[in-house]
Length: 207
Image (cartoon, rainbow, N blue to C red; front, side):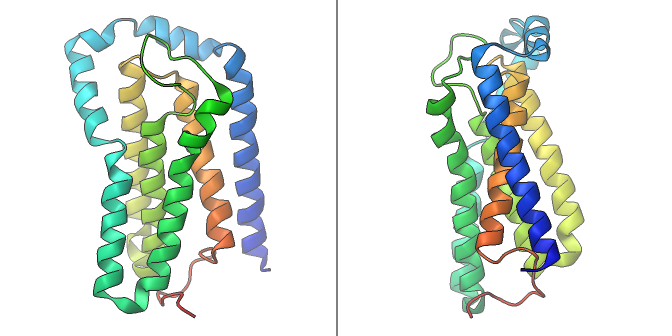
C-alpha cells in the first residue's frame, strides 16, 4: 500500500465518520445555522426566486447519475480497452448515490417544511456530488488536463444545487453539507478499494 493510498483512506474514513456524526447530531434538533437560514428563507419557494430554484433543482438532481452511467456504458462499448475502468467507475457512482437512499431511513430527519420523504442527506446534492466525483476520477485516468476544470465545475454545480434545495425550503443547510461528506467519504473509500486511487496513467484497469 502506497503512502498516497493510505492518505486517501484516512481522509475517506474521516469524512464518512463526520457524515455519521453530523447526522446523529442534527437528527435530534436543527443546528442554529439551519434554523436561522430556514427562518430567513421562509416562503421564498412561493416567490420568483423559488421558481428559479425549482428549475435549477430539476436540472441538477437525480437524473445526472443516470446520464453519467449511460455515458460510461457508451464509452465502454466504444473503447473496449476502457471497459474495466468504466465498470469500476460505475460501481463508485452507484455506491456514492446509495448514501442518500441508505442513510435517510437511519437518521429519520424531518424536512424544514411539509414535504415527502426524509431530509438527511439531500438526495439531490448526493446525486450532483456523486456525478462530479466520478467525472473527476474519469478525467484523472483518461484526460488529466481536464481534472481542475471538471473539479471546479463540479464544485460549482454542488453549491448551486445545495442553494436551490435550501431556497425551496425542502432541506436544511446541514443536509447539503452531510451529502457532500457522505459522497466524498464513500467515494474515496470505494475508489481506493477498486484501485482507482491514486489515478493511473490513462490506461484501462482490465488487468
